[in-house]
Amino acid sequence: MNNMHPQISDYESARQRLQLQAQQNLFKHAIALEFGGLGDDFQGLVEAHTAVGVQCQDTGLILSINAHLWGAVFPLLIYGTPTQQQHWLPDLLSGQLIGGHAITEPEGGSDLTALTTRASHTVEGFSLNGCKRYITNTPIADVLIIYARLDQQLSAFMVKKDDVGVQFTDQTQVNGCVTATMGDVLLNNCLIPHDRLLGKMGAGAMMIQSALELERAFIFAGISGIMHWQLAEVIGYARERQVQGKPLGSHQAISHKIADMQVRLSTIRLWLNECARLKDAQKRITLVSAQTKLFASEAFMQSSLDAIQIMGARGLEVNNRLAQLVQDALASRLFSGSSEIQRNIIAALLGIGIYTS
Image (cartoon, rainbow, N blue to C red; front, side, top):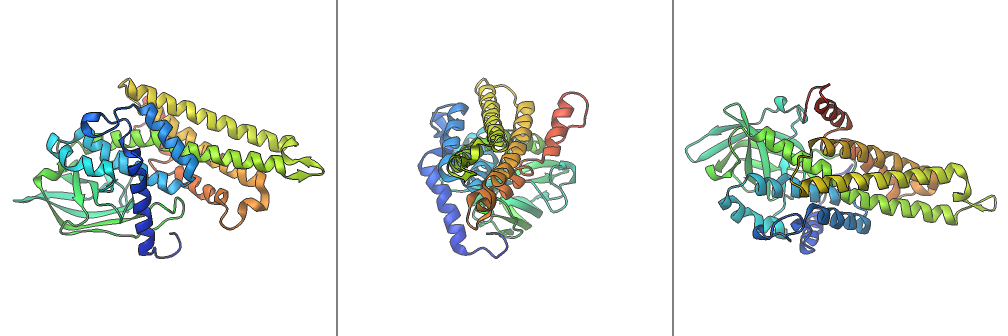
């Protein structure tokens, strides 16, 4: 979907892939039975998402799934009124509706003070004006939680694709995670009713922090599954490829790279399990989710580079999934907050830096 204008069939395929995951109940993990979930825990979520990564090796799909869950489903679970939950959750959990959230703008993303999208009061509800950029699941999303300033206070609003005054577009496109649809959200006097305010007025920053903590903690469950497949591919090649009459893997320079890939993967799994343990114990994960995101994204990048180095020219062949994973790994260092942002968070929580989302 990069380097050319996406076709309608691309959008249909992207939507169908998400709905297929919904049919497998992937959106229902770590959600209580009373809300339509499976009634299991976050450890169950990690295991299910890891399995999806192993099976599909599609980083874009993983990104879309997580945007849907942490951008729309869980904010409704945490901050929605009973009426909002009853209205929206069944269709979001079944995949009938595709969701996400819109934070980033052309001139602001991680710096929430730079966000300029505005909401104003009207007789019927609210009017929203502004532009959001690089929004995952746009334009296929049916509903997005959009963060805007209402009376100078950052707040959250549920905006539907067919609301008056809004466009979910397919621009701007990026390289990396190319099967995840992405684009701008254009708001021009977008009118929505009063009951589309999610949470309290002014709670937007807290809601963004909550959503990103969850996303940072668990998006690498699916990616760890992809890394499991990546490692298996490299091991198989290192066993089969002969160099000077010996398997490629018998050379220490190669075997050490593979050993490092295994260590990174195992460490990511330990971090994921710790995030799940803390969430299941109903404890805060601000620090551990930032550490998970920082380590996992850098590890994904290094292992993807090592895999290409081991495979040689074969790893760069057209349609070789390993080559695409390098671009996906680059993207992983940026989505949900860059590696630098994660370091800022960690330092601030240690009392030596400035906190940022």
